[in-house]
Length: 125
Image (tube, rainbow, N blue to C red; front, side):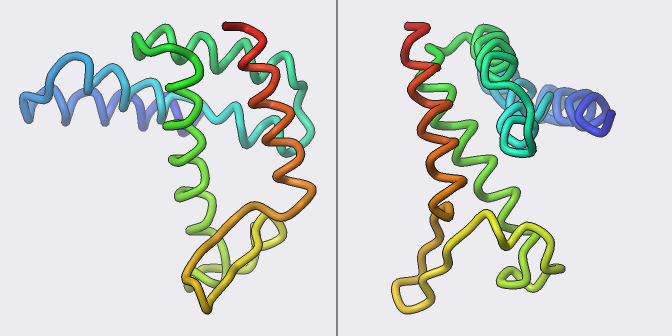
């Protein structure tokens, strides 16, 4: 439900600020749903691919390009819910933190699921 409200707010604000229609469409599509999170929490692979395909169409981008943008957004958004980001330790299990190199990556299991999702998306092209 939060995604519906966020999408409406983002669309209204970006339109008021005179963003280009394609920029508004992209931002709206990105915040309108969380298929990556749903999939990583046990949702179906096909459901995630279908949802991402619809989001890419809404954003008027090729699905592979849209997926890369969506994955970057998902990573940044989700990483905010970790102890490392001064938040609660709730989603830390998804990541590996490399403090020496100031980098973050998905843990092995999460990365495997993300790669499976990416492979399924590539098959739709």
